[in-house]
Image (cartoon, rainbow, N blue to C red):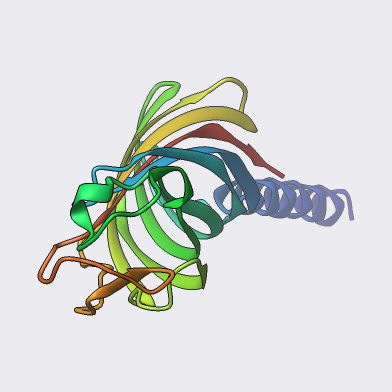
Length: 197
């Protein structure tokens, strides 16, 4: 009887340890912070706004984590250069506002408390001040993170777009004609924090 009780306690202890270890491997969380973005080919200024989303880090090895993300990101460019349009245009009114839902798959490589982040992303446009923006953008994500605690960290990322968001159209902002064949790409920097539950 004592042996059976000891075996059951041992099994319960192993099961509980395994369950705790398993829950540590997948830690859903949130991430958010500030965007500084512009659009290449417009000579616009950086636009500052925010990003906020959820993440699902999956620890596959001591040094490696796969992290799918779903993030709402407000981007664009301010003060587009008026010389890029075909006639005079008020520079102060030429801001490009872009809202995206980003689906990222980030590979995180851990070196102690520091992590290197790299991975592709799919950005789906949800709102734009210009009807001729392509609805989909592909991005690369390059970043660096620092774990302050086991749950809280800070990060910085660069997200260059791959696809021209001009959509091949000649109208750019509020019906103002834009020069043909300009290759316009999103270029976004993010500084923020993440928290694992």
